[in-house]
Structures are given as C-alpha cells and as structure tokens.
Amino acid sequence: MTLREEIETLRLAVQFMTRLPVPEGALYDPSRMARSIRYYPLTGLLVGGAAALVLLIASCLWSMPVAIVLAMLTATLMTGALHEDGFADMVDGFWGGHTVERRLGIMRDSRLGSYGALGLIFLVLLNLAALMSFTPGQAAVALLTAHMLSRLSVVVVMDRGNYVRRTGAGQDVQKGPGREGWLVIAWTLVPGLIASFMCFGLLLTVLSMALAVVASIAFLKFSERKIGGYTGDVLGAVQQLTCLIVILTLAL
Image (cartoon, rainbow, N blue to C red):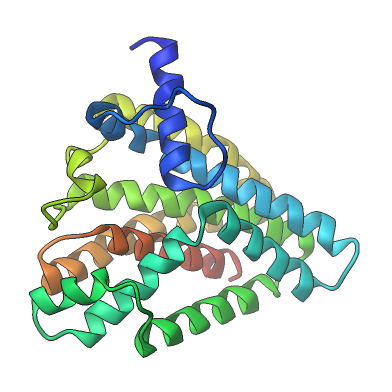
C-alpha cells in the first residue's frame, strides 16, 4: 500500500464521516471505502479536537453552559448532524415499528417522529448535564476522548455485525478493518488516550474505552434482535450513545 493510496483512503474517510471540505482526489472506490474505516477514529479526533478547542476559547468569554453548547454545535456542524439523524431514525424505527420490514421502512423515512425527537432532546440534555460537571479543560479532553472512542465503537459494530440493507455504503465495508487496519486504529487512539490518562487517570480512561466497546457490542446484539443486523442509522446511534457513555464514565 503506497503512501498516496493511504492519503486517498484517509480523505475518503473524512469525506464520508464529516462535512469538512476535502481536496479533489478522494474518489469513491469500493475497496478504498472498505479500507477507510480504519481512519474513522481519526475523524473522531478531528471532530472532538475542534469541539474541544471551541469549548476552551468560548469558556474564556462566556459561562460553561454557553461554551458547552457551542462545542456541541461545532461537532454537529462538522458532521452535518449525520450521527444525530441516524440516532433519531433508529429510535423512531425500533420503537415505532412492530416488524422488521416496518422498522426498516420507518428508518428510511426522512420525517422525524415523536420517539426520535424525544430521544434527541434527552441525549442533548444528558450530554450537557454531564459536561457541566467538568472544568473547561476536563470537558475539552472528555469531548476529544468521547468522539474518538465512539468512532471506534462504529468500527467494532461494522466488524462484528451484518449490514441488512441491499443498498448503501455499508455494502462495501462488511469485512472489517483487518489486522493492518486495527494496527492503524491502535496508533490513532494513542493521542486521545494519553490526554485522557493525564486528565482523568488510568482507571477511568481504561474503563471508558472498555465500556465503549462493550456497549457497542451489546447494542449490536439488540439491533440484531430488532432488524437482524445493522444499518447506517444504527451506526449513527452507536456513535451518539457510546459518545455519551464515555462522557458519563469520565464524569464519575
């Protein structure tokens, strides 16, 4: 694998997982798409790092609630609410449908239902309440760690689960990152884990990572009972839920 090919693969991961402008050259290719999942945690570092920076700057100008909201808004804008949309669709589908076909149909519907709306409200409130328990520096590191580990959880689900739709980008990434990909992911995790260790200590850092992985596997099992596997919306929900779980864990 050449360096140029790896750069193109990274560009595709950023293009797929965020709304950041990507230089021309990251052309879609099924095999490249499959390899790009190794860089999902790195996109989490980019999003979490930007949110953390906004929080630190905003906390010097306004109160913590304002800084936290601006940081959360930054992360949402950087991803185009991709994961929040998936979370809301999943909640609507899993709780509003009584058959697999109906659940999948609801999740494809672009309209937001009552279950999804309430789910988003409680998700935002829980994130806000948990981040309020930190100092600005701790909140910044928590955001960085949570966004990184939540993308790791997405890779875990993609590696262990089955994509249930006949169409969609998930068709190209059903084999997992492979041994080489997991090595890339392991190196990607190092900066965020070091920052978390220095801020929260070894126990909470290891616990947050372990819970992110365990929660992603548990949620995959839940999704398999509901629809037989996972969809893009389920991946969005996994990212949002594990992000919250990591923040809550670091707030212990």
